Amino acid sequence: MTAQSIIYPITLEEPIPLSVTASQRRAQRELIGSRIAALEEEIRQFKSLQNEWAEISRLPPEILSQIFVWYKELRSGSGRYPGSLDWTNVSHVSRQWRTVALACPQLWSTIYTSSSQLANAMIKICSQPQRLERLVIQCGMDFLETVMEKLSAPAPFLQQLKLEGLGRRIGEEVILPAAQFLGNEAPQLRHLELEGFTLPWQAISFKSLRTMKVHSTRWRDSPLHPEPDSFFNAMGEMKDSLRDLDLSGVDLPIKPLPSNHTILFPRMERLKLRASSRECENVLRHFAIPITATLQLSSTDRYGNTPSSVSTLGSAITSSWLASPLSNSGTPPSLKSLMIYESNSSFMEGSFQAVVDMEQPALKMRVEFPGGPWATHVAPTLPLDNLEILSLFNCCSVTTLLSTFSTLPRLHTVCVDRFDIREFYQHIADDPAFQSQNFTNLTPRDLPPAPLTRFPSLTTLICRGVHFGHSSSSLAIPFGYSSLAISMDAFEQLLTLRSERGRPLRSLKLEKCIGWNDYNVNELRKIVDDVEWDGVIRFS
Image 1 (tube, helix red, strand yellow):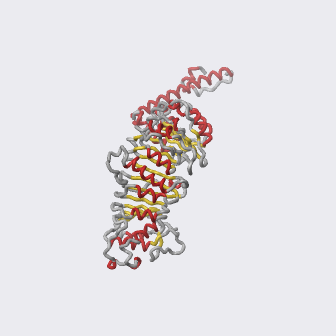
Image 2 (tube, rainbow, N blue to C red):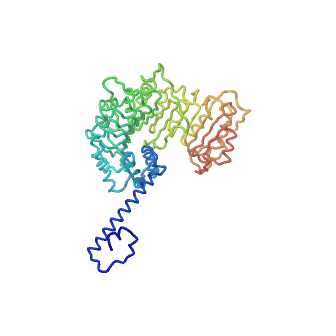
Image 3 (tube, rainbow, N blue to C red):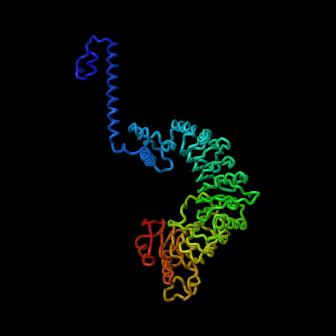
């Protein structure tokens, strides 16, 4: 058998002579191997040429890379611990796809893994921050400390950074290295999100930040408050670009600056502070944000506040937001939307994301307080004459609050939960216009001429998680129902009476409420024009 017979397969059927030596066999195998490699290369070239003629090859690299990013998000999942890596197959389809995929930093800067080998690869990636545009790391606290040691070089192209310590205990934090973090040089950084970090404010010098979110697990007053100079200097460097500032559970200064200095944030769209009332008040005294911004305040301390110290928070809100140098208004405008949430634990905050599931007016504010009458001291200090939307959740002082809000002339939408519905119902039922009659036996022709004085403009009511029972009395609920439940019959009767008074409810939303079925909802629709119900029959 000659070399020529190996090259042309038509002679491969010839038997191999028994006299062939071992060296000849090796030579023939090598010759066959080279021929196979040549044929495979030719097939690869034909496949590449075939791919080039495919319609998808006409897409520009920037569009193809965006498709890869979407595919990665789809395959990785939307859970807290997405782990699928099969999206990397896009780099194995063709040379063009591989080139485009490897040239897309957004694909490779976010890697979810539980593999120690891939985790070590992530550490190597973090050792080269000068090449990154986006980096998201969610890992255990021990591994996070190792990663932080690698994030010491400047990151000239980094635009988004999120670091989150998973499984941390209350109060367990990683101290951000003051001098080494990104070499204090990340000129393109737009989005910074840190969870589980103690932040040395003197180390922060990112003038291009648009979004800054720093979350901590602190749940009570801390004796470790930063010096006002370092904190406010860091904020001052970001004042021209910052649009979203979220400081939740982070130690904030309680001492004011020696000078009456105000930092203007002309582009601020949302300011959220979760700290003690003293910390919130001090920060707001030195901040000025536009009235178009959304303000969210959460007072998380349970001890150390006094009614007078909490009341000063209201004046700080006005000077920082409603009547700030950026408001361009001689008199403070009134709030349009307000949510008040009280709880005995600051960790309940994540349970309520939206004030009301509807379009919100521009001037809206959310305040959260621990158990206690703090809200009753803050609310009267706020401009509420034109308030339109009110949400009350878990308010232990709801009776006092209702007295403040029920006479507002423009308040048309109220949202209450199961903890506040009984007091809300009773407050409306106790309207002086109803008191001359036996409320439960009242009929339209028995109505006295006195006009309604409590929530006179109410047209939309949102009940969230409310327990309803069946009883003819105003509040009595049959045995077995929650003590927080309200009588469905009395509720319908109250709506009927308000309608007969010329103050009908136009819209009623029942969100995750208990006790309703199709028949009861249809009965409600005879009283209220628009009734929204999720269609789920729930039992207590």
